[in-house]
Every structure is written in C-alpha cells, then in structure tokens.
Length: 125
Image (cartoon, rainbow, N blue to C red; front, side, top):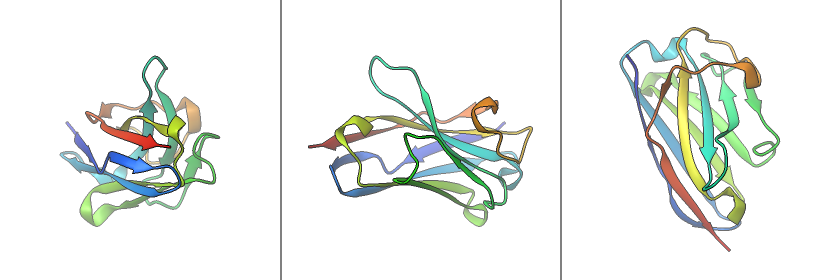
C-alpha cells in the first residue's frame, strides 16, 4: 500500500508562485506514474498534470499548460507541482495520486490507485 501526503498549500497572491509537494511511502515509488489533480468547491475533480516514473515524460491539461510544472525526485520519493502566476480560479484542494500498474503517462485515461488527503490552495486577487 502506498501512502501519499501533500504539503505546501496555503494562501498566495495572484501572480505569485507556490510549490506543492507529494511525499510517498510504501511501495516502490520510482516505478509509478504520478498525477496531480484539484477540486474546487462545487466542481468535479480535474486532472492537471502527470509524470512518468523516470520523470522523462510529462502531460498537462489545458488548465495547467504553460503555468504549472510537474517534476519528481525519486531519491526523495517526492513529486512536485510548481504553480506559477496562479489566478483566483486556481483556488482548490490539490491532490496527488499514483498509478501502481503503470510507470508511463497515459493522459486522461490513466487509472490511479492511491490518493493523498489533499492540500488547500487559496489564491487571492
């Protein structure tokens, strides 16, 4: 079983920056693809970005493309999501998740098996 703990959320001004972390324990983290999601109040959870097990392949949805950057440090069992120039509409709970069956990125069809508890990001205008 894999445990995931997100951190780094908080209050940030629009146009600033914030780096979220997703620390994993259990399993073999370096073998798993990892995704970042978010869910705003009253909205469905949405995929933002995903990264392959080596970090060599990344995938971004339109909500994240050009502003957010996903990366990983397998030596630290951690995946990051850098939020650059966030907007008030980026306010949400941000979650990471792992696909223990695949190390490759599969886009929107990827199935994730374990989830973290989330970290709140609030962007002020």
